[in-house]
Amino acid sequence: DTEVTQTPKHLVMGMTNKKSLKCEQHMGHRAMYWYKQKAKKPPELMFVYSYEKLSINESVPSRFSPECPNSSLLNLHLHALQPEDSALYLCASSQVRISNTEAFFGQGTRLTVV
Amino acid sequence: AQTVTQSQPEMSVQEAETVTLSCTYDTSENNYYLFWYKQPPSRQMILVIRQEAYKQQNATENRFSVNFQKAAKSFSLKISDSQLGDTAMYFCAFMRLTQGGSEKLVFGKGTKLTVNP
Image 1 (cartoon, rainbow over the protein chains, first blue to last red):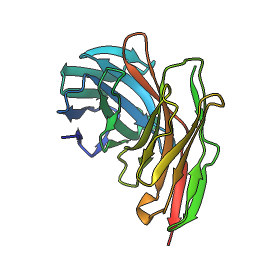
Image 2 (cartoon, rainbow over the protein chains, first blue to last red):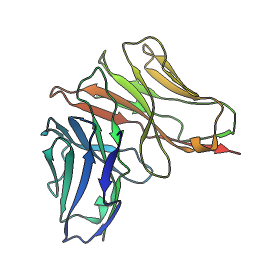
Image 3 (cartoon, rainbow over the protein chains, first blue to last red):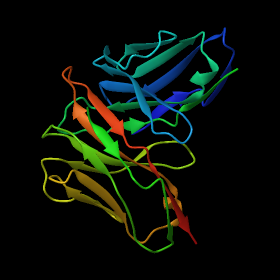
Image 4 (tube, rainbow over the protein chains, first blue to last red):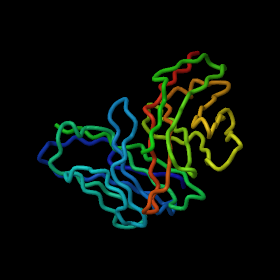
């Protein structure tokens, strides 16, 4: 199983809503990532979890709140978003060991903030 | 800080022909990894090929091969016998190990490749 599963695939939310994005993998990876990708741009790193602990926060606004409840699951909680937050949100996972490293990506959640 | 530069925003190639996508990067580190990822319209980022910086031999995966020039900090992707399914955005990416033990991928801006029948 080399899949990273993201749900939902599409999400439309109002600026006052609270929603969550979910990411799941069963490859035994202990590093998990959230990326944000605007149209026709490369993915930009938001957060990295290593062994279920937040290891990198790329100065992301607090309206994005990540959570890693266990080694297979990564959530991104959204609250009071702005229209400019509309983007494709990609989750990825990888092994932490540098000897065998490849990041597997999910298909993303297309988020639209109205 | 590491940067990855892809100087070709768009490229096209005829089916069955060969095309080379360029990538240069800037880093002061000696140990790192380089990747080419493909993102078709389905949106999923798919790993095409990877190269460890400590390996002198260029990586090859079927029709895909790289020309890794460490001194020049160049990492180009060659696609042989191009197929219609190769049409996608291609991202060059650099990975380093951070102090916390995590790995951080830095992407170039991408090259949109179109394979024409």
